[in-house]
Image (cartoon, rainbow, N blue to C red; front, side, top):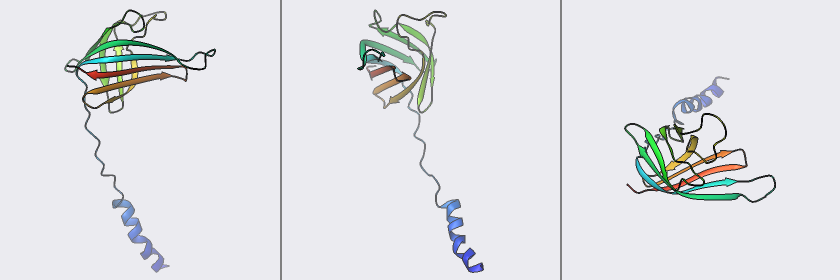
Length: 144
């Protein structure tokens, strides 16, 4: 019995120290400045099988010291002009729109709520989904 324990001792020691995860968490790259690009609203109703896609060219300005934002550009039909505050972590970015209606259903999309995002210093993409019927996509590039 003693010999079997001796064979397992190196394995037990290795489990404690050999399999450490030394992968460093990448530093958080905070988007800042002006971003221009396309907003897409993809909606699938129960009647139509393919998604209905509506697009608008928007401008998103992110200010980092104050963590405020503003959406301008083509805000006449699909996307509302939005402004407020935002925060983020390594996976998600959250927007709190000051112009979002307090009651009722807004007629246009507001940049409000939690979005999964990707940012590499020049390309900034965000997506939010609601079940399998609605997706909000932002495909933006840094301009300033």
